Image (cartoon, rainbow, N blue to C red; front, side, top):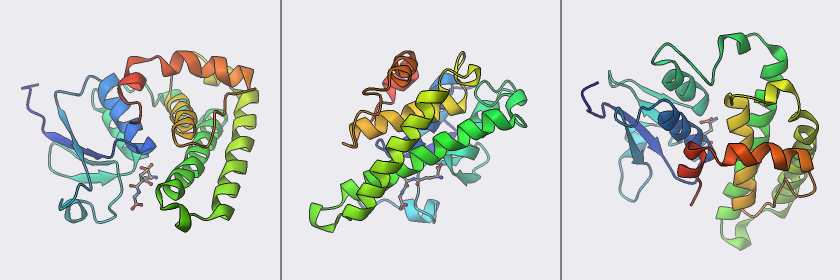
Length: 204
Ligand SMILES: N[C@@H](CCC(=O)N[C@@H](CS)C(=O)NCC(=O)O)C(=O)O
């Protein structure tokens, strides 16, 4: 490595999906290779770089761009040939994949809540907010029963990171503390929230 940040990761600091990519950059010691750039700043040409306009978006060493946290995290995690958060054993482990995709689904709903809350109050949809609040509560109940599963214990994989990022986003965006009165979820998230890469990427 020559210390040049050849890759570019476009983010917003409040996005849970961009946060996942930022966590992997830190965990895989890629900060010297990946420049983190805030997207969608006033007057920026981000829509010319990524026509979808979403974050995260990664431009690799060869200048090739890709969007979506799922592929970006897998790509960054696999650069050294030793993926830690995308284990070979998980690729066809349906029990693990069910948990990872349930966590993604929970995160998607909380992101919708966050987007709704970012609108002026008079433009918010009470029906959408109620729908997402109920979904988040159901998903938190689901994970309260599953965080003791060996697949959700031990070294974190993507399922762990996604669930932790979703729960922290809910708290930050005013949806509520989903660990309150969920004892298992509360003790599960504590050590994950304390991981330095989680702390360094906490939403503003
Ligand atoms: N499935 C995508 C979701 C990305 C996404 O929805 N990003 C949001 C920020 S949380 C975004 O950029 N929204 C802006 C828009 O849709 O215009 C992923 O995992 O990266």
